[in-house]
Length: 407
Image (cartoon, rainbow, N blue to C red):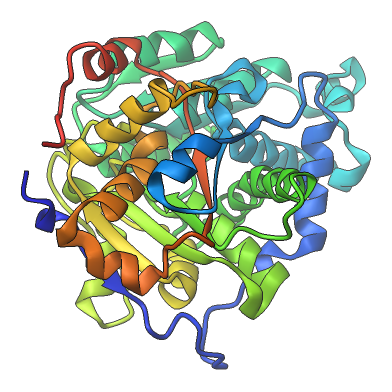
């Protein structure tokens, strides 16, 4: 395997303190606390596990490896519900004229509130996890949802969304065109679009989704402190449109300023819109066209969210574009732990960061990355496994059959 196909850009300006950098005001600690308090009002809420992989850390020659396991989030096997549910909560708060901190999830479920709201249909486009989260939240609140998936989507993901009470369909479009189709459908059918890609005149809901995602990084840092550490030194973040990565990056900048960890943004080569935007060097987001074919279906997005793009552009330390075998290796490593390390079932989009680290510490071709990132025995590295085996057939193909080998 030619590992030089893993491309990267090191952002030398990430640590510069200039007035021209993007604002992270939307990810203030006040707003994050508001989102987390809302999530904590769910009867299903509990923090997802943060696993310490001590034996793997020794094998890789680093100090600590932690994996935040979002497969346990609300029984939905992925983190995306955090963003969709908070965006729905904020939309309903605005519609009711009641502040979100006065509206628990249970209060929104009440007969009194439902009568005030009437019937609402929430509409979204998804690769699977976001749509399932929106469908779940809408159903829990007694509302309707319509979900569209891009062509080539897993029938299992489609079925999981329908099982949450949504009307769901696989389209004939790629992800970004499916987003446009969902927006058109919502407009024509008086629905409410819940999408994490902003555009002119549609910014509040994408911002609320990003704020909702921050619950998981807030939990993770509290859990790291419980292990006896202040902060990780490195955080690996996977990116689709960039809303999740931008939310976590914004959180770290907002809370820790120059003390923040080094952040590494990872994308599949077939849909590396953030990487290509950085490479273009003009400061603007650039789209990737075509089918966006990758096993990392949760990251198969060709157009950056312009809000998160600016945060990532200005503050992230490294941008990486990699092939599918990197994610497959991460899936296998987490599935086959060393000694008494915990086993973690992570889907392709959730495991790509660990797969990348394994190659950085093992392969001579990637030593420049290791040097630039200062990965050594003192490194404390955080990964977010954003999903479990949301497509069990694809998961078994990787783990059982060795699909997408790395050598």
